[in-house]
Image (cartoon, rainbow, N blue to C red; front, side):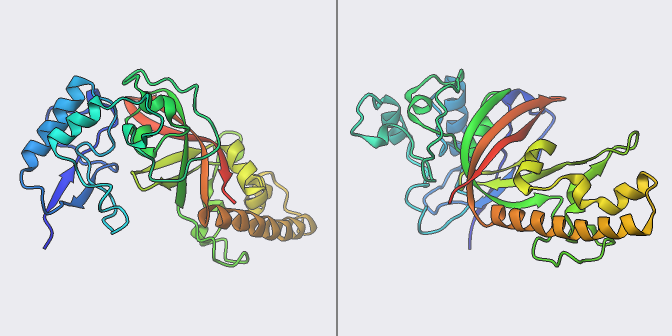
Length: 290
């Protein structure tokens, strides 16, 4: 029988309310390792490291999201004295990889040398060519990161395996679910998010209309042809038939590209922004690893 602990991860420490615990979408529940006997001590030690301004440690106070044999040995929480030794370890020795935490995913070729880490100006951010999603969550805002990850799904969710001829009444079967229409001028554009996961944590990244059109190879007008022509007053049967036929081909193309994105490991540029004291992430660029 597992013992569980609720780990609350806030995006910025000054965003957390003093009125009580707040469970958000970034909170997670995870089983405790058998050798963890005192949860209070675990969290107090984590708090002291935050207050001291210790170098970023993805293992500090956070248990692995996925408990399996592949990560059981690398993601276990170290004893306090072991952590103090790691903090004193010099990063100038290039032969020792243990001086800086290793990424749980393959290194990407894109460089992130220009990223400035004002929280902890240590060798950790200098020697890494990309950031984990956990670093993006806890990093400064605004900031840009280069990360490698898997894209689990879109939000809203679209069934990319469905037939392109699915009924327009079922929006979740079509790319139309990823589009919005401006009430004032009727302009159509993509507006959705990707759910990212790299083994260290998960986050949702907003996809802009320009990026979406590049990734899917179609425009929002392409996949919403019927509703767009109706809005513009174009009701001629010939044009409506052509628009319908083109819509089906655009739908198939967009779903094909989206399916490839969801089935592959990708790397891209993520930007963090602050809106109304809340932290959001925007996907500025995406490359699929072949």
